[in-house]
Image (cartoon, rainbow, N blue to C red; front, top):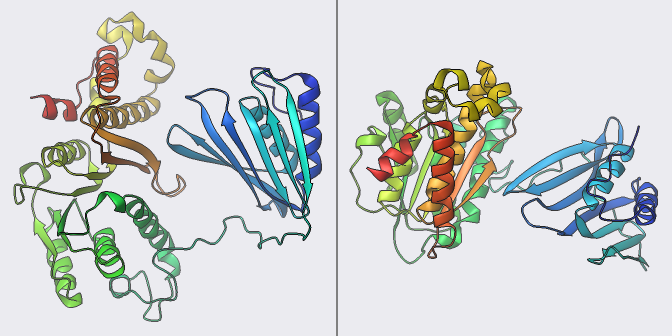
Length: 406
C-alpha cells in the first residue's frame, strides 16, 4: 500500500525518511503511545494522539484527531498508521513516542531542521491489556446499583447493566461527563436551577439529579418539561419514590413555559426541529450560565434552501452537487442549522463547542452543542458577521435568529 502524500511539503525528503523509519520500527507490539503537537498553523488539526488497540485480530493503532472542538477517530493497521502519521506530521513540529523500552522526541524547527532524541527506560514500562475500546471509568459504575437505573430497566437489582440497555448506560455516562466538565461554572453556595425541556422518560434527568445532588452535593432544583401526561405522571411518581424533593416534572410546551425567572442551566435533548430554537431563546432570555442541546429533525432550513435554478442565484451553483439530491440537501441543511445555532450563541456571549454525543453508529442525531456563558466580547462581532454572510448566501432565516432579533 502506498503511503499518504506529504501534504504541504514543509519538510525535506531526508527528514520524512527518518520519521518513516522511526515509525516503521516502533509501530509494533511494544508501542505504548504517540502524540503529535505544536501545529505549524492555527485553524487546522490541533493535536493527534495514538494508542495501540486490537485490530483485525492483531495489534492496531487508534488515531485520535483533535480539530475545531471536535474529536475524530481512525483505527488502522501499522502500515496505514505510519502513512497517516507522516501525512499529519507535515503540519506539526513535535512528535513524542513511548514504547515499552524507549521514548523518542522529534522536534522540528520553524525552518524545517529536525532533532531526534532517543532515551532508553532504565526499567521497562508495562503495557495495559489491549482492547478495541479501553474499558471506560464511568461516573455511574457497573456493579454499583443505582435506584433509578434499576426502575428504568437499565440495571438489575445487583447493579449489572442489562445487555440490551448497555448503549443507554453509556449514553447516560457520556452525558454526565459533559456535565462534569462544566461544574466550575455552577455555583455551590446557593440553589441552582436546571430546566430540562422535552425530558421524555427522563433517563438523563434522573441521572443529572443523582449525579449533582447525591454524588457532588449540589443544592439543585431540576424541572423536567414534556408534553406527554403519562410520561410526566410516571416520572413524578419515581421522583417521590426516591425522595428527590427538588426534582419536579411538569406538562408544558417549550415555547410557552414561564414558570421561572432565572435558570442556571438549560438542557434540551432531541427537541424536534424549531423546538430547539425556542429552548435556546428561552435559555438566553434567562441568562443561563450553561446550555446543553442535542438538536433533532432540523427540517426548517431544508424547506427554505433552494437550488440555483429555482431561486435565480447563480452563486449557489457551487452547492449543486449537494443541493440536487434530497438526502444530501437534508443533511447539509441540518449541519447549517446547527452551525448557525452555535454562531448565534457565540454572538450572544457564549463559548460554544460542537461535540459528539454518542457514536454515529447508534444514531445520526449525535451532535451536542455545549455553550458556556463568558464575560468578554471576543468573537461576538465576528460571529454576527458569519451569521449574516451564511444566511444571505443560502437565502435562509432560521427560527433562532427570528426569536432573538424580534
